[in-house]
Amino acid sequence: MALCGCSAGAIAQHPANPATPLKSTSRGVLGIHLHDLSATNSKDINLGTVSSALQTGDPETRIQGGREGFSIVRSFTLDIPKSIPGQTAFVTLSASLALPEPTFIVSVDGVVLSERPKVVASRVPTGLARNHRLQIFVPSSVTEKNSRFANTVVFSIVPE
Image 1 (tube, rainbow, N blue to C red):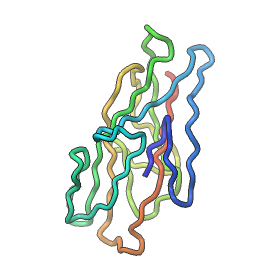
Image 2 (spheres, one colour):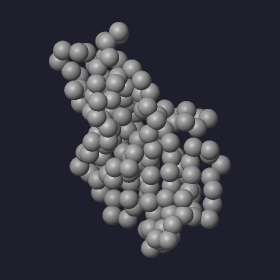
Image 3 (cartoon, one colour):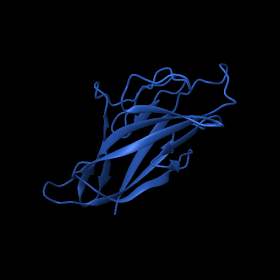
Image 4 (tube, rainbow, N blue to C red):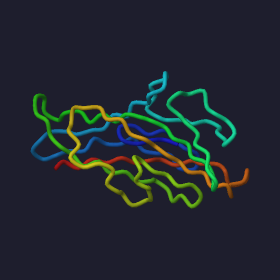
């Protein structure tokens, strides 16, 4: 699983392109920096092998069990640098999935994602790092055959 904003990791069957900083005609360049909160501080989040019976060794990743399946919950930080030093601008942050996801339910900050971008947060000030929450729900109907998850969360920002 890769989170895309300022970088993207390659995934099987679907290589991701590096994200291009968004350009605003009057305010310079806007970009997104992903900060993995684990010790690796990677630009990709690799959850590795998880199951409802296993807790991960990563303090930023939690497994939450339920009657109909389990959820993998992961904290991460997005930083949207100021486009012009000394000025705080506001942006709308949207997220989507790069590929259709028929098996798992993926959400960021409680917003369920699909291939169509959805607003995750509005009036986000630039220049501040904000914590976010990625959640992947794994239904109990998942078997070993269909348990592989490889997708990319694509973030986009629009100046307000």
